[in-house]
Length: 287
Image (cartoon, rainbow, N blue to C red; front, side, top):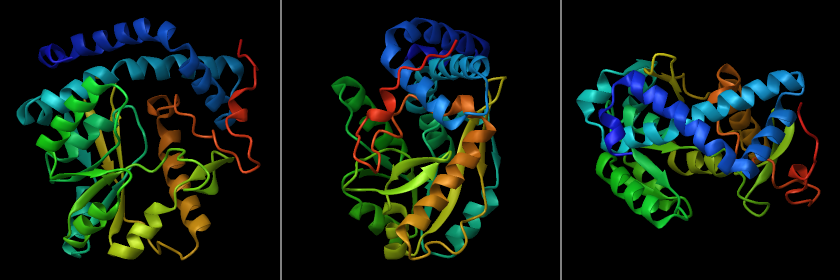
């Protein structure tokens, strides 16, 4: 991974395709999860179309190791040549209000690199969850600590609130299933999904502004970071309604480049009726 940052862009793209070819047979369970997610989220597509989308999704994930390496070790100068920004004025205007900014994103395949690229413009605090692989955990923690303004552990949001009250930026992705006790249910692509209500609660406590933020990889290996206008009239005071706003926002962005979303996550694992994980036990196969 360390050496890959010195490859020419075309060689990196080729290496990403090779990684996809290598890892696909080794990720059979995750491939089934991604396949099921695509069935649930894109029922309007044919089996053939979903199969092609799944293949493209795994090709995109093949680039994740390269992009992660770039985010950890590439120089600012090297990265600046490969990124363009859209909507930075929204972030500047939000900071001028003095209440802090939540850069809200989803788990896109270029998420790790996207965080590093936005920090070329503004220092940010980043969320962190302990990884099972101790080597990756140590290197990622070291890299994020070096490049960011500070680390916020996922299970302790208090430093996040303190940072926002100091008018800092926090990079935050709430689109994962954290179980029934910590969630409310809102739909994602029309499917009930356990959704953490923490976003609206943090805004209530801090007064922060939410700026939607999406990193995308272009075909030529460059990256576009899109920042949108801040969420208006948020929070509403209703946790479920607020969770729906967040899910709708992320869904809208995913639909623009569905192959660049992390479909291998069991987003619908927890269901309201209590059948944990049952939604992924359906054995329907795509041809």
